Image 1 (cartoon, rainbow, N blue to C red):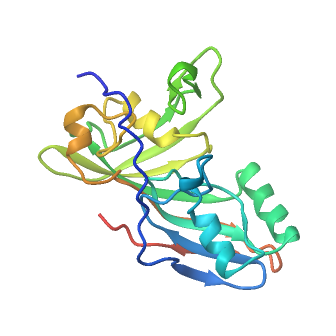
Image 2: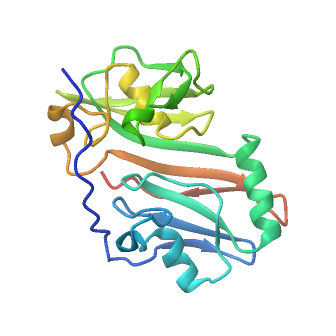
Length: 223
């Protein structure tokens, strides 16, 4: 089964709700990002609407710390001041944060859990696609565990140890189980099996920039 080439980019971001706030204090803003909304603005002027712009419309000091792909939904944290932003960014860089994703993938995975340890690099002729590249790739690790199976797909819990671009999408493809609805990496049958990318950032934990307290935020999986 061959992968289709990326589908044409048609940007129609969801309008309702405009901005979904999970938590806000003087240091952090936690949001629920919908599928289909860019995280940061694209180059064309028609790609200006994004999570960052919407957040800054309501909270002008909010700053992006990490990103989710346009078609990925789920929990996101932003810094509300420079000190908090630097503190949170450092936690992401030093892997002190913990992220759990839910995905539905093509086919029935054999085995109950495992670790994918495959380096990832940009597939330059086809960017923004990424690929497994043992020679030039940056280290990338993902832990996976089966949640349930149905006739044609498997629901999995994914815990990335690293944060490479498209990491979960490339790693699941490497197992032969592309994520359903994936316009970059799924073959036609897997792409059309869902009306959106079946990847959701369900929970995020980090240490609060001011108090040092361990924080855990969850956004229920919509599929």
